[in-house]
Image 1 (cartoon, rainbow, N blue to C red):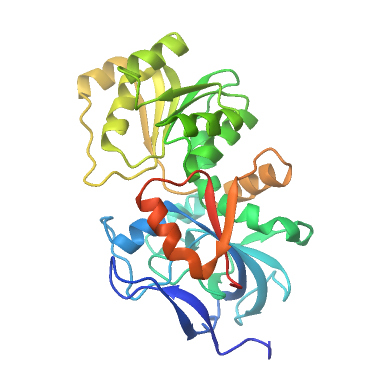
Image 2 (image 1 turned 30 degrees about the vertical axis):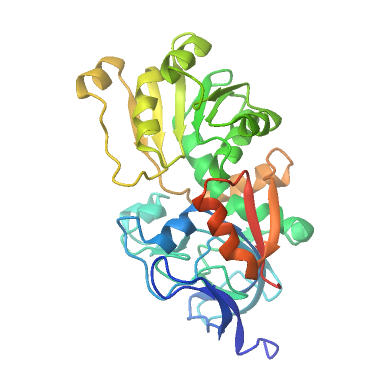
Length: 351
């Protein structure tokens, strides 16, 4: 504990769309219920871009250190913490704190808790060398996985969010799932989880290179929206009646509303991506006539976190990553803004 520095490197912004500053900031002190984690690696999620832009309808704190896919070593903890030891590997995910006492928490739906804190959004996140998290929300990472924590870090949000959405559909092996925004950070993991669950996957995205990428990940079919005249007709043709499930992880309002058209009767449409000023434009009568199941999903719970991590530890899911230094984070934000990211960027906080 005496080796914990008083200051550390972080990337911080003081206003939305303002400069992303790589600088020295104070090392946080854990509250009685918190772990202090020496963050080694952190995935970069599209949600981090939205937090910086401030274009979601939920306010962030300012100034803000973003990031919510961090893995590192427990170096200190508060007086109320039980079950953790110095040196344990721990993961930080989107949900930083929940009361664990309300009706939602007691039903294992802590992501709906009214007392929530979100990592890198309503509290400082993982784009720093030391960060804090409620010990009940920290994800346990086996010390045997210490050499793979860079690849594991995106599982804590991108993987968990996709996995929870897919699991909620309750699809049977051999049924079709369409993943909208399939080449992105959530979509590429969604493909892999779907294949691990023995589903047939249509990957929906744009461009030849993204098509090659999703095929390498195991997608059975690729529909390129940039050169497909009628996406809905194409998917209905491929699936002989429509997709049994649709996972919307893109932020396109048009893509979201199109998904209702090619969903099969009794199909499950899960909404994860948040389009700017998004709204449903699909007719109520049409939805009723198809008996569609429409489900909005945020992030997974603790049990789903453990399950998603286990898929990765078993080698069934592997996030394609590119590791860069924390100081290079502004460049990653630029690439995300230009929709040029395939897979996931991960920052090494030591550089």
